Amino acid sequence: MLARKTAKALALALALLPALLLLALQRVVRPLRLLRLAPLRSERISHFASNTEVYLCERDAGLHPPAIDLFFCADKVSNPALARMWGRAVGMWPVWLSAVPQVALAIGRRLPNAQDYIAPILENRGRDIEGLLASTPPHLAFTEVEEAEGQRGLRALGVPEGAEFVCFHVRDPAYLSAEFSAVDWGYMSHRDATLESHVPAAEALAELGYWVIRMGSVVASPLPATHPRVIDYPLSGLRSDLMDLYLGAKCRFYFGTDSGIWAVSGIFRRPIVFSSYSMIGAFQTWGWNYIHVPALLRRAADGSLVPFAEIAERRLAILDTNERLEQEGVVLVHSAPEVIVDAVLEMDARLSGAWVETPEDAAMQRRCWELLSPVVEHPERGGISTRVAAGLLKRHPELLA
Image (cartoon, rainbow, N blue to C red; front, side, top):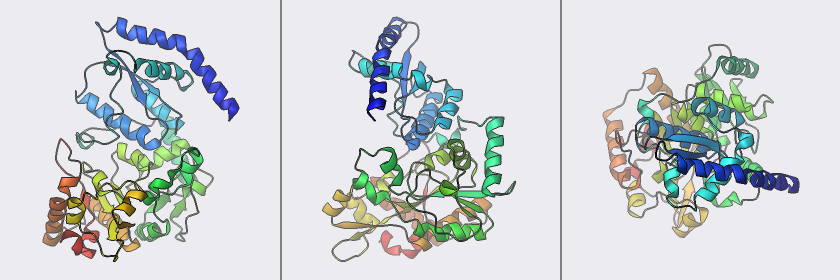
C-alpha cells in the first residue's frame, strides 16, 4: 500500500510541468480552438460506460460547444478493455500518462473561467435526460479479433453457436468491499437484493431455451441454480474484462438490480428489466426498451403497502440511505421471485412479438405514470418511455389506489 501511494505521488510530481504546459496551451490556442479536458469516471464501470456514452450522444446532437476534447481516465480503471474501446472511439490519453491531465484538471479548476476548459462529461450522471440513446447508434464496436475472442468465450462457457442468451446480475456488497475497502458502503445496502429471488426467473428463461448467464466480477456467493443452461460466469474461471463487455453487449436482454454492470447493456442499447429498483425517483424513464420492477415500501408500523400516490405526496421516491428509510418509518421490500419471473417473461414476449396488452394493462400503466410523474426525471425528448412491469401492477392493484 505504501509503495503504491509513493509511486502515485511521484507520478503526480513528475506530471506537474507538462500539466502546466497543457494549461498554458489551452489558453494560448483559445482564440483559434477550444481545448477541453474531458475526465472519464473510470473507477466504476457504470459511470465509465454511461457517462461517456451519454455525453458523446449529447455532443453529436450539438448540445455542447464545438471543441477538441482531451479524454483521459480520471481515476483507477475499472475495466481496461472498456478503456481500450473508448480509446478507439474518441482518442484518449494513455493510462500510463493520465497523471498529466489529472494534475492539469486539479490546477485548472482553480483558474479563472475554469469551466470553459473542462468538458461537461460528468454533469449527465450517466442519465440520458435528453432521450438520445433511442435515436442514436452505440459509439463502441468490437474489432474482428475481439469478436472472435468473445465467440470463443461463449463456446468455453458452453453456449452453442447461434444460441440466444440472457445476462443477469444481482447486487451484493462483495465488489465494492473488495475494490473500495476504505469506504463503508453499508449505508446503501438497501440496493442489494437476494440472489435466490432471481433464480426462478433465470430458470424460467432457461426453460424457454435461453442460456442465462449470471454476471459479476467479485461476488458474495455461488449461484444456487440447478438448470444446465444457467451459468455462474463469475465463478467459472473464464471471466475477463472483454467478456464482461461482450456478454452485456450481445445478450438478448439483461435483467437484475440497478448495479453497475447493467450499463454495458445500456450503452449497447440492449433491452433491460430492472428488478428490485430501490428508488422510484431514479427510474431510467427514457428507456424505451426497459421494464422497471420497483422494490416496494411498507409501513414499519403495520406492514401495509405504501401506494404510489403516497410515495409521491410524501416525497419517498428517493430514499437513498437506510437511515432515511428508517426516518420515514418505511421498510424496503425487494421484488418477490414471482414478480421477477412475470417481468422477464413479459420482456421475452415483447421482444418476440407475442405480448398482447389488454385494456386493463394499458389503463394501469397510464394510472401508474399519472401518480409517479411528479417524482421522476422527465426526458427532454419523447417523454417517459419506460414501463413498470405489468405483472407487478396486476398483483398489487393497491399501488394505484
